[in-house]
Amino acid sequence: MKYFLSVLFFASVNTLNAQFYERPLEDSPQRNARIVAQQNQTIELPFWDDFSTSTGTLDTAWWTPQSQLQIIVKSGIGIDPPTVGVATFDGVNAQGQPYLPSPTDGGVDSLVSHYIDLTKVPTGLRNTVYLSFFYQFYGVGESPEEQDSLILYFKNVDGQWDKMWPKQGETYSTDPTIFTEIFTQVNGTQYFHPEFQFMLKATGRQNGWLDNWLVDYVYMDKRRFATDNSYLDRAFTFPPSSIFDLYTAIPFDDFVAAIDKDLLFKPTTTKLRNLEADLQPVEYSVNLYDTLNNILIEQITQDQPLVLFGKQLKEISSNPLDPDLLDTNTDSLYLMLEYSVNSGDKFLIDSIFNSNIDTVFYDSLHVKEINLRKNDILRRYFNLHNYYAYDDGTAEYGAGINQPQGKIALQFNVLEGKYLNRIDIYFPNVQGNQAGLPLELFVLNDFEGNENSVRFQSNIAISHTGINEFISYELASPIFVTDTFFIGFTNLSSSEDWLTIGLDKNTDSSDKIFVNIDGNWLPNTTVQGSIMMRPYFTKDPPILGIKEEESVVIDVYPNPSNGRLHINGSYKSINLINVLGKPVTYEMINQDEIRFKVNSPQVLILLIETNSGMISKRIMATPN
Image (cartoon, rainbow, N blue to C red; front, side, top):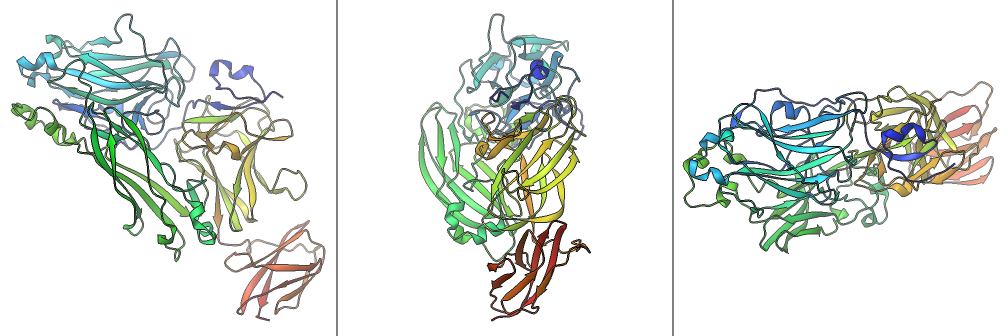
């Protein structure tokens, strides 16, 4: 079988077989977007939105209700945007539903402003009104095709939409790593009316998260000019990296068990941009908070000086956090990492022509909302609880397999043995709807293929709840895992339907992914990122529900025991744990005898795996 990397476009889906690919996300499921329908509002200049504080949906202060139902705001999809968070244009609405079920080209997402009363602009300043914005050609998303477009319209006094950009003969910047700034003058009496609006409208395939355009830093005001591209604004552009060395979330007991806790963590990084043409000295700080108890744990980096040259984008980093400051006398930690910059940024009203500003500018109800400092704080949340995660919780793409009986597995390494009781997976809706497709969920010790390799198997069907919302698959009984283990699934579909899992492109655990297309397990070489699959653990051992088959007789004695146990009967493996599920060290003297040591009287549980299932024996242990 041929095995290689390809970005798969839907025109060729049915022509390629037995592959594991990166795939653009189509036809995502409806999510529970809390969008409040409301009438269009009338606002005044200035207009400014950098999308940095939006949490998925648009800011209702600037955009129409219809836009809020179409556009999703994301961070991490743009490559080095002006500020963190961009408006995304594609073939699904804000609930993840496609505009059409078929890959027809046509109009897709629209971003439309509220009414802007331009009669309030003094006549002498009307030739200074400009709209500017930045756009990027897909970033880490899916590339538009030659016939696709992003078009800017102005609404004239007659209610008609006039195309303003791109101009005749003008071409798009197609570099997916660059955000290009566009300036358009509001020029003509037909636009200075009480219900002026502007609209950015995309065209592309109407059946999925395809043909992506990204827009950021939309600004419209008077007293501007065609090259007015220096803003008294310093802004973060990307979410902070993970505080953990390998993961984005880890079990709390791994943290407690680690001998050298420093190895679990690493310094974090992000990027800071100077949107002004002139040099600006700044200071930045990084703090770590306990969100459950609302306390500051550590000032990781404090008032770090930095000089940003004009228009410079610079990566900044934190000092390593001190794990000794984290509370180990609990069962979980919920942390917030906060970057902040003392930037010298101002409120927009203070930064533009402080003298001779007309009273209308001061009186605008929206001036108070235009705060250039709002992109000076950046937060990210981390859990030390009961699961591992490589991904950051957001899928920019998908990883798909269309081979019947094809398998995908994800490797994890535990520092301390624990009971796996649940697997969470994000299956996005793609190519129509993959809900209901059958698969086999599994847990493996290794890829050797012997009777000890497979720890768990269960047939399930794919289901959905919403965009980036994981589905939990409970194991029938918790299983004890140590060292290295693998979770994954087998494609049980008899057709060549694509079975696609969410792919986070902002983290990379591709070396932990393994694929079995033709009966042989191979390291992943075709997909870069982190597939969205997470193992969850419980402290409760599988005591209830374990039945001893009448045909299986295992005698364990003496009981009570002072450190020596005899085991009579045929078995495959054993484990000795305490009532909290933690493993107890023991020595195997021979097949029929083990020795252990305890410091106080307590109940231990001997788990015995036989050919007929699992048997548990309660042992009253005493010090020897």
